[in-house]
Image (cartoon, rainbow, N blue to C red; front, side, top):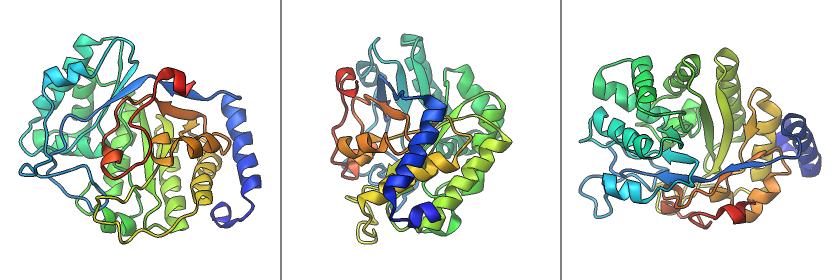
Length: 310
């Protein structure tokens, strides 16, 4: 709470940068990656989301296998796959997408699905979390993405994504994934209606999950984009210093996480560069064509080349 309330931003940055350098030296990492969102049709509706739509929406889409393959090439090192909770797709449809990618690009690291999607798959199959995760791994999933966390504090979660997987279930899914050797990331959606203590609570929950069942690779602060969402009128004003405090606090508090990510998609390219001096050692990747955040009005580019990232 002291970090979130201080006006001494430079000292906070120096402390976070010191911790980052102790863990990662002066290196910053990124990956040549591609985001694939198979469908935006979703069985639930969250107030903060501009991506998910109903089947009857004029904006609804479903990518064919041919379209998915056309988005990929041998230079891509990681494919990030997330989408809506499609009411007409069974678990097999999702497995087929994973197998499609892995069979055609076996060298590619497949980071797929959020804990919310894993929870959905347990409902579709009637199986437990472990069975779903092991089946996904057998078909080519190498890691979980970390999305769906939003804000884990129940008071905020009820207001921004009431139909979504509850916080304790999200935490359970990540603990189980780690316990069977599947690494994951973790996110926070900030910059909307939360208070600083909600951010601290979120970080504390994540640190406890990692202490109990190690396996997180990176923590990813995601700045909320309000355009085209049901929360546009509810968003409070947050200065740029708040962005930097969230990233710095994450590095200082999450002493058991290898990396904090500077997510240029939501921060914008310039602020993302600054965040690299506030505890971040991960610049995400080329992404190529991000959709979910841009549907909510993100002003950043859809993707970047490897040369730009360097």
